[in-house]
Length: 183
Image 1 (spheres, rainbow, N blue to C red):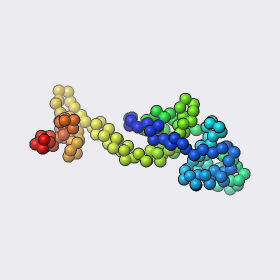
Image 2: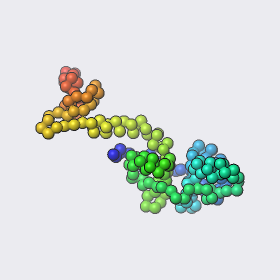
Image 3: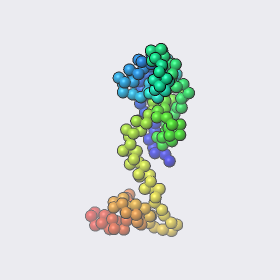
Image 4: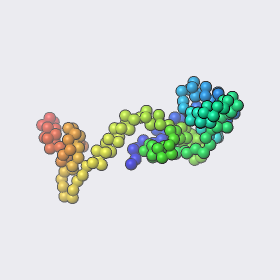
């Protein structure tokens, strides 16, 4: 099911980036200061990896390693899943759930252009919910061969009934008659 919102529409276009030579302590300070859960590791304009909170916890803190002795390049994730900016948000959510990740670098023609996170999706959640609701209502509509009406949810009262299209709205018999009176 396509939602109609693309990754490009909601991605972070300027994510926080760091050098592969930056110490893990400095990376953690940068995450804290910028209020982010990940850093993109780049050299010049080349995407090298991603460093996440999970990397810090699993590879440094839980093992009792000294964060001053490691650099971003030592613990960053280099085998990253990526996504195209033209991908639909639905496809993004499926990929994130399937891969058990919360963020994906956005790549176009081999070039890193942004980052999309679960928080970016949550930021548009009310709009997304409305779009999904419209789609589900449309899917619920049924019309039998030779039938002049549809069956589904009335756009005015919300009752499931026979629907008639009146000036672009799908209305039940009662609301159809009321709409006719009020016009």
